Amino acid sequence: MYRGPRGTADLLPSEQKFWRYLESNAENVAERFGYRRIDTPVFEDSGLFVRGVGQGTDLVEKETYTFQDRGGDMLTLRAEGTAPVCRAYLEHGMHNLVQPVRLYYFTSIYRYERPQAGRYREHHQFGIEAIGDGNPAVDAEVIELGWRFLSGIGLQKFTIQVNSIGDFNCRPTYLGELKDYYAKRRGLLCDDCKVRFERNPLRLLDCKKENCLALSAEAPHSIDHLCGECQEHWDRLKGYLSALGLLFNIDHHLVRGLNYYTRTVFEIQPPVEGSQSAIIGGGRYDGLIQELGGRPTPGIGFGMGIERVILNLREQGISVPDQDGPKVMVSYIGDAACKEAIKLASQLRQEGISATLAPSGKSIKGQMRHAFSLGTAYAIIIGDNELQKGTLILRDMGKGEQQEATLAQVKQILQG
Ligand code: HAM
Image (cartoon, rainbow, N blue to C red; front, side):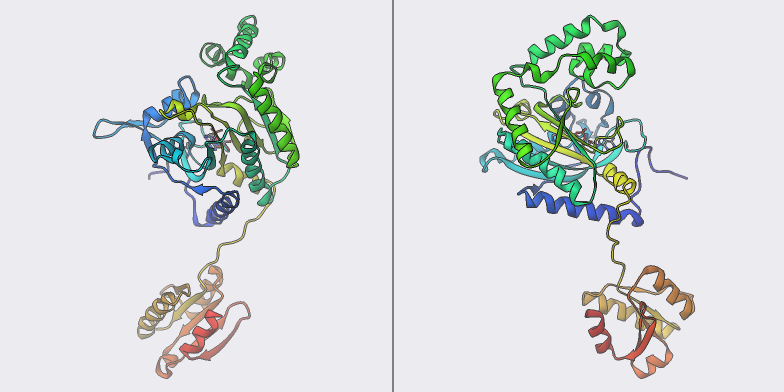
């Protein structure tokens, strides 16, 4: 027997209510903030992620699903949402539109990771990207949108973590200081961090191993090394977040795992701390569009893990609205009535009334039990008597009462 691939999940009918609810809430919040939906292909030219996300990142080095297609092209399954959206922004000349261009997506993401609770090989993100405006007001807007989404669905006790990792002017000096600091303590680093020291020293700051945590606690802070412009951006962002009433913590170790970030980086984390805990991760990427061949264009956005949102909804005991089942079940006794039942169900559906046919081979009592478990509001019963008279029996499942009625009367009640 085949099983679903490791790290993937089937979204069964009983869970669909979460997905519909979250997708429609995501759409509502995003559209309330003026964002418009974009969908990009499930695979892209592999070079897009190598250029966009960057060599030396875990994502590009170890986690992409990359393959050669039958024509010889190297393709990668969508490993994150930002680079594809920026590629589409450039490809479709969106720089000619009024800036910033505000876009959102609700999409699947593929990463070859070690599966565990909250970490999968196929996961889904609600993401937003605001491209073409470097004002820190947009940073505050993006953080606020994520926050409003989470609070709108009833989640509580989340914290906003922010940091600034500077830009191409000031970061080299900071990285120099950071490397000096770690060079003197290199022997104490874990094996992964010894590699990070060479390839991606910022990531030294967010290693969760005990020794490395003790070292990063004393490491120099990026916000103490910002150039004038980055400092102003950072100060204004903090002011805007406060003006919006959004409480935030400054996390000096928040650097994020993708190379495109500049200035603002942020995460929104649930109450229980853990390495997979970030429910939202994002930041500014003012060099990405240029890296992908465009003119210098600022951008900022976030990705929110939908599976993690669902885990947190469950943990906090928050229920979501049930999905409606069919309104009516059409039951019948005997072959002649079966034909009438098929025709009647078809006719009701064409008139906009959701209808399902009763299961075959069951007594009327068994059929009513079935209607009850489906949660239909009504059942229609067609028996020999009704066939001869040209009438129907309509049963109100909630009240447990039934009446004989004409087709017109039944339709009137069902449409009411
Ligand atoms: P990311 O931090 O890699 O950022 O992912 C964003 C969110 O997706 C995470 O905070 C987490 O909730 C969820 N997530 C990530 N990996 C997994 C996984 N393996 N299983 C389950 N959930 C996961 C990005 O992808 C950036 N593109 C975000 C961004 C948009 N930055 C700017 N714009």
